[in-house]
Amino acid sequence: MQEVPTGDELLKVLGALGNPHRMRIVGALLEGRNYVSRLARELGIGRPLLHMHLQRLEAAGLVVGTLELSESGKSMKYFELTPFCFALTPQSVATAALTLPEEERTTVKESAK
Amino acid sequence: MQEVPTGDELLKVLGALGNPHRMRIVGALLEGRNYVSRLARELGIGRPLLHMHLQRLEAAGLVVGTLELSESGKSMKYFELTPFCFALTPQSVATAALTLPEEERTTVKESAK
DNA sequence: GATATGTGTCAGGTTTCTTTGACAGGTCCG
DNA sequence: CGGACCTGTCAAAGAAACCTGACACATATC
Image (cartoon, rainbow over all chains, first blue to last red):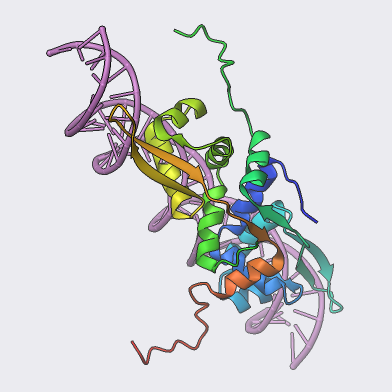
């Protein structure tokens, strides 16, 4: 049930969820999939802004968007939630941190002055 | 075991953990409490910077710091981890989102201004 | 006194994130 | 055609986060 993300993945997830608008977006999508323009109206924010937020959430893998054609022929981009599940504990964070860029231990090549 | 934070609390936590340096700080503190200057040396970052990061972590309730006096009389600020535990799922995020500021619908009640 | 340790803070520059308004395209309907 | 929807992108302003160097204060040791 628990996902074990790399440091980079976890950073994306935390960065994506650590924003009031994006938290509300998740809340809104929990009630069902929705398309961008309608979601923007319901949340009371502009489309360009929502578009950016959705992109961030999608980049983190928390939502997925599919461009569909309504019966009338208009294209609608529907977004829905991913059943993500992360546990945040000192251990899980520390584990993820190990996979980060580099800790640069004493391995500092340069002739230490 | 699971903590049920308000939207504001969760925002602080996510904002605190969503940073490579702070993730590494958590990882470093998992091996035991430590004081600022030493921690800065081990992580290879400046004290002012670490100080800021620790403040952010402490504000989120993920670490606690105590100013102690070493035997020699110097003051040392020791930080240690809090046994935090958060679950990140669509439901938990949506629940937290409900407690956020306000969605400012068209019904702006200002009777009790 | 000079040095090395520890504490903290502050101003500033840099970077990143957030937000908005304007623009491009498309389909459908009266 | 004009309007009402839908999609997307861009540039630029504004706000917030991040980082660094310098400063001030302590104590202990040489």
